[in-house]
Length: 251
Image (cartoon, rainbow, N blue to C red):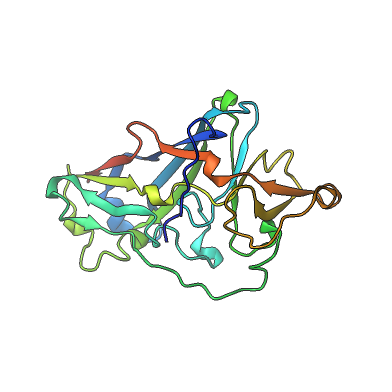
């Protein structure tokens, strides 16, 4: 399910995060696709950087659960992120007017309730992950990489095989804006000032992850809680030219 996004009033944004897509290699080799089903043949990168901020010297940490920024590994018992439709359309051949597609999958997961799902500390909930975006003034970005083997690339392609690709074709990968965002965020870095802190599911503004009241100030100080900021005030935008990326088929 795509993220439910709230709009804030102009001028009330705390920060704006720019997102773009690329691949590690611009070539898709037919020889590699045929030689081994277990070697990586396509590595898709999602880049995030802070474009503007009311606190430009501070990094931002977001929850990645339910977004394309989540790269939990299927081999660790997690559902393949891309198989849940978090990139638009899969790989689309530019020469076929959209009729030649290698889909990544579009499963909608109905997950059974697990122990810890309702824990107030998000860091102790199963299948909950976080990512730190560098501070605006650093000029740096953070990259999430999704790695596909040949077997994975064609897993949901029905009758398509590497033989259906032709040298010289270009195939396009696009972002799905519905999966760009977060349900919880705060100022700080996982490796620095947030190390060892507990992330309370309560957040300012609309609270997506907690139905009760948040901890009072005394409890925050005593227990070391971090309260989430208003999700509507963290804006995600696709950078110019960053919505899609093309790879060329080679021998």
